[in-house]
Length: 375
Length: 251
Image (cartoon, rainbow over all chains, first blue to last red):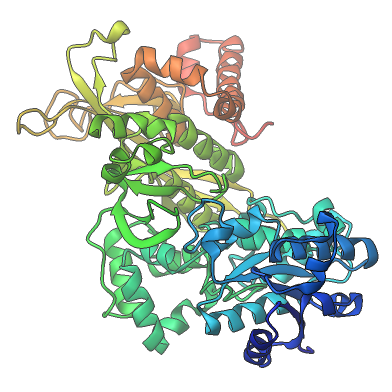
């Protein structure tokens, strides 16, 4: 497949050149200052990456009408999106902001590890922080390639839309758990019908970026796999990094579909459950059998969790999953504003929730009395 | 042979609905039990094995209710602070579809189908929780002499009352699946509050109600038909009657 095109827009020509050079390995980069951008540049791009702060733009200063004065990169992206919707039939294009001040974009929301929420709020596909150039290259390349993977015409029939879903997610067709994986994905309400048809699949991509991959849904990140295997997330990652045996054992459940690797590894929940079923001979929740399987099939170096029912705790400020596993009986379920209803529960410890009025307000009704009692 | 059949999807829906409906009546340590029960059933469906498999709420991880402070009597007038512990064992076999490429939609009860309920008095002042009551709600097999759906008290120890050697009475029962039995037990321990709670849970109730109504309706209708058509002692006929395997499959 040809390298996808990334259109970079920045008011600082020198910075633009530096960043374009960094990205050259991952994509074909078109670097432009705002005034230089043409319809042809934008039409070719799979990703349009706009710098957030656009201060030096003499042409903008020269015009009188405030409607012609986009204040920042978010506004430029909105203008471009609107213009392209009017003039270009193919809507397969991601708009993203590149910023060293994500907290300014967050509008009061916590910004750390919350790019998905900020992007969604700003009607963008993604926002990239400036302080992680290596990650930027990887992510822009993955995003651009993912846009390029979307079919030119999203299928109009329900059957074909489901087939496209399975194909884009790269569900391992021959695995026994493939139907379960598809059913899991479909239970998360993917916009694969009218919304996907109207947006040439961009609604589907956004669903993955904003509402699926950041949360424990049909795909799990390392933490949720570790909790299921009753081991510490850090040891899961450490041993996975160095153990070929462990990587091989878990490989069947590794997610390799569209956007894979965008925010770290993901695993098919159905695949992990299937492996555990096989390893425990049909006793998938037996702690001892899981422990034996982890030691024998993955690695004896993995650090077991001492908890009876480990669950992943989300952070108290940004509600993103953390490496901290907590006992289910010491946890309460919270419902942060953007946490999808189809995702697995967001847990936080009773004591943390009890000490914080704003957290307490997020505790689901069935757990309210537990935080009240504790307080 | 009466091997009752169930649709996988029906039982998953039932478990999901109960998981949401039961809310704070489930002790925090058992929050994952119902979802695990569902996951195990999904595993059995997808296992590729057509032999008998054990499915249930494991003894190593029972379903505990929260403590009822006398709520087993109206107005919370009960003497004890109690909670229930439930485990279950079902021996089931998935039913292969004629076309092998189609995943099985049903499973059959092929052996033991027992849900054990223990009611404990809450631990107080360093004294451990004590068992106050125990019964089992079961579905019989071809050989079972009593009611097909029955309840047995104790019956697991060598000594009385209700020693293992005395496997009567088999009190007639109306409930089959572990989720239905969980609701029964919760509604016993929380006489007033469960009814009030359920009334306020429209969304969950709308999923739970049709499943239970259909299943209870089918069971009662079958019993009514047996009694109406009995040519001897209605009770004796009912006691011996075995339902058709598809009793719970009608939509």
